[in-house]
Image (cartoon, rainbow, N blue to C red):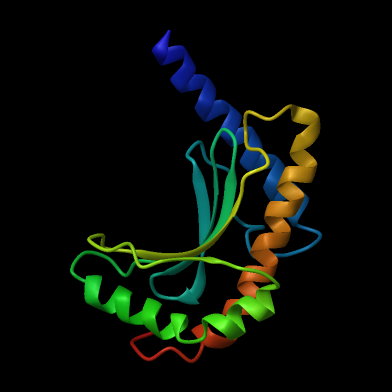
Length: 158
């Protein structure tokens, strides 16, 4: 039984990503070239090494995020990039149009800036998916637009 649920979860998420990518294409080319996967997230580079714009989905929620991870041994660099962005928190959140979740992820290698949408996920009824995915796409578009002017000004290797 557990194996069947495992396989089912992967298939449902693949369908979620397939639909989300298609729905996003008329609004943004950011994730248009992504191949749908089975995992809980998909993402693309922001154009700067180790700064990725990711979507994630769970059973009852979903996110849009900037995930900062330049790899093993780069914990201090990741935190420094996060801290540089956080100094512009007020301007970034104003450009986004709302509050964001700022996670330095103490004790972890990576950091993230995200928006969580808790009104549904991949276990929501299929007829709700377009609306849920649409608000997730909107969050990603707004997040990328709000962060981009500050990402391009970050100190550190591009």
